[in-house]
Structures are given as structure tokens and as C-alpha cells.
Amino acid sequence: MRNELRQPTDLTNEQLLSDVKALAGREREATARLIASLAELDARRLYLGEGYSSLFTYCTRCLVVGQFEPLVVGQFDRSSKQV
Image 1 (tube, rainbow, N blue to C red):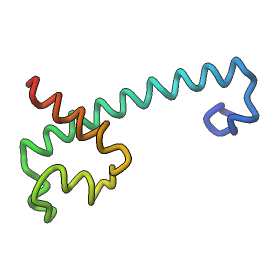
Image 2 (image 1 turned 180 degrees about the vertical axis):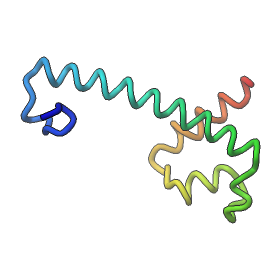
Image 3 (image 1 turned 45 degrees about the vertical axis):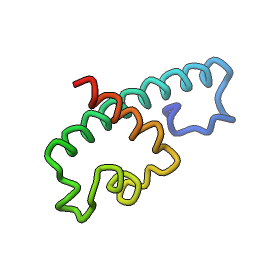
């Protein structure tokens, strides 16, 4: 059985430490890809065709990123200003 399928309580200390590091790396990669995709979605203004007036509204209502709003939308705002 792969570590991803086991409960954290079933892992050894070494396995848990390894999994946490791997999961954090995948989360960072996924967030970076999401931000890049949101930037392109914004450039194309695709949220308008989905019935949302802004990218912010699309993120909070369609993607329901409410609790992660500062992370995703805030990072998107910063990254779009750097482009």
C-alpha cells in the first residue's frame, strides 16, 4: 500500500516526516499552477462568460476559495503585478 493511502496515525515518524515534506512540495506546485492558470483566465476574462463580474467574484463564488482567498487571490494579485 502507498503512503498516500494510509492514515497519518499509521505512519512511522520517518514516514510521516517524509510525507509532510512531499505534500508541502506538491501543494506549492499546485498553488503555483493555479496562480498561473488564474492569470490566464483573467487575461482572457473567461469569468465574464461564466456569469461573474470579476476574477475575485469567480474565485470566491465558483471556486469557493474563501478560506484560502488571501493565499490564492493575494498571490495572484502580486504575481500579476510582476508580469
